[in-house]
Amino acid sequence: MRLLSSLTTLLAAALPLLAPAQTVQLTVQPGDPKLLISKHIQGQFAEHLGRCIYDGFWVDEKLNVPKQGRIRMDVVQALQRIHVPNLRWPGGCFADTYHWHDGVGPAAQRPKMLNLWWGNTLEDNSFGTHEFLELCQLLGTEPYLAANVGSGTVQEMAGWMEYLNSNEDTPLVLERRRNGHPEPYKVSWWGIGNESWGCGGNMTAQYYTDVYKRYATFAHDYPGTRLKKIVSGANGDDANWTETCMKNIPLNQMWGLTLHQYTLPTGSWSGSKGKATGFGEDQYFSTLRNCLRMDAIVARHAAIMDKYDKDKRVALLVDEWGVWTDVEPGTNPGFLYQQNSLRDALVAGTTLNIFNNHCDRVKGANLAQAVNVLQAVILTDKEKMLLTPTYHVFDLYQVHQDAEFLPVQFSSPDYVFGNEKIPALNASASKDKSGAVHISLVNLDPNKPLTIETSLPGVSWKTVTGRVLTSAKINDYNTFDKPNTVALADFKGAKKKGDKLAVTLPAKSVVVLELK
Image (cartoon, rainbow, N blue to C red; front, side, top):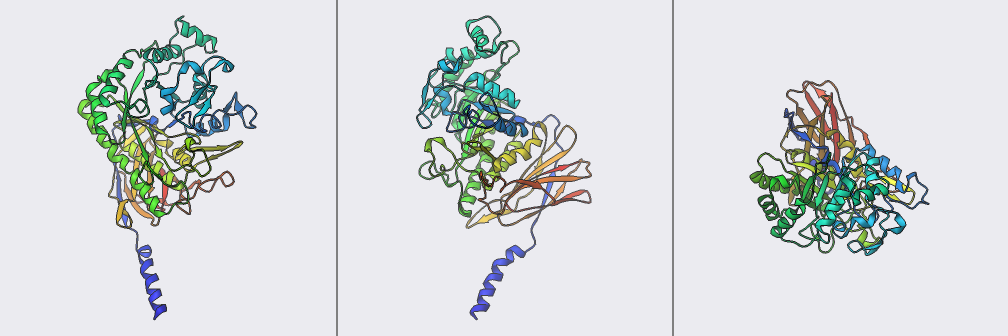
């Protein structure tokens, strides 16, 4: 009897897995050719924090890796392959203690400073404005500078703009020429402060809008360079901050408004934020549940912006986002170094789908951060370098850059864990300039594949190909000894079925399909 009871229990547990998978009916609708998914949604962030700049992009002259000067070229080449559209610098919290003039001129003469935000380390300013802009030129990316509002002055910011963008014979322009760059850099993207509600000054929304208008007044265009002035926006779902900015700042004084929203596995800033590796399904589920809040948060801020800007002239830029966990054991807690698992890749795919689906308002975003910090796309250890699972998602999704947005309609099955549930499926789609259609699909359920039947009215196509990112376990990650544990593979689970597309989407996977 005991054996029979055990068999019955095992059979009952197996029945859900043996039951036929629910077929999701998904429709890719025709788009508006004028509505594009901005390539800038796939931007990256490089702060003077931990080993992002130093030991990441900017390395010791003696390190045996390919370099241009001290810029690490294997890192550059990896980012070139995913066509990084913009790079935000020098912070983050660091930006509001950074004085740009300390980082130009002969390196030996640059003053040192303490990085009070991130570990009280000594900053030697060897990586400054010219080095950053050389990096951007190598990457072929748009530089996005954050001006110091918290501890700086209007004159300091205006001087930086003149130094970079003017071509008249002023003292600052003559200094730039002496420092090796005769022509203007023509930097147009400027953040006016960073997290002004917090580390950028602990300002109220009302006070910040007055400060912003003063700074923006002295942020001048120069011949050939029209500035994109960007407001330091809200923390998470702080609707009042967005409302106050949109109400008080004239539309012609801002090109964009930012939003910062991180995904914490535990959802708590105090105590443990959660593990980067070695977590169970409970923390996997809570991480994805918290990640999905981004959709409602973006929608809420976009609705407020619509009240004051019906023509959507002001861009929403989510210029800090990503998974934030506890640091790796034994590392400096001020350096925010964490590993990067398949779970983080699923967060990246889901978040980029959310941004794509809000592309009428979201025109830019920056993953925090590019190298060795938080949800990095690249990790380094002396001569070694690896690509994280999140890197591979950006590789997959680059097909959406500046492509025509195609709305996707479907009803998602649930991923159930305990007494909670979240949508198992999320997706976005686009059509590129050649007419190829790309559909990005994320299955968050770690246990069940999804069967999808897709209608594409108005799309003429003959072949389907794809790539998939998945792994055996939800907490799998790449190491310097095993850098390909989580890697891209060709996807064979899609086929044409009459005039429809039939897809079997593996559990815990990101898939991007191309239809031609």
